[in-house]
Length: 43
Image 1 (tube, rainbow, N blue to C red):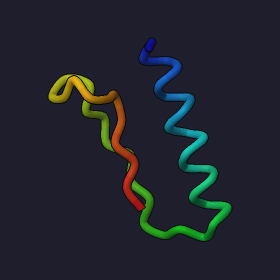
Image 2 (image 1 turned 90 degrees about the horizontal axis):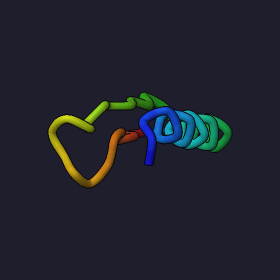
Image 3 (image 1 turned 135 degrees about the vertical axis):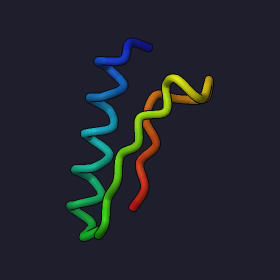
Image 4 (image 1 turned 90 degrees about the vertical axis):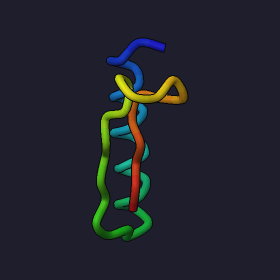
């Protein structure tokens, strides 16, 4: 998956979390340290 597509999906995840009133949302870029994904979203 392209990094641009991953970034878009992370943004969708953040929007969904905001809609569910999540707090302290963080997006961590992990593409250089993990083969599992490009971003890690924490709320």
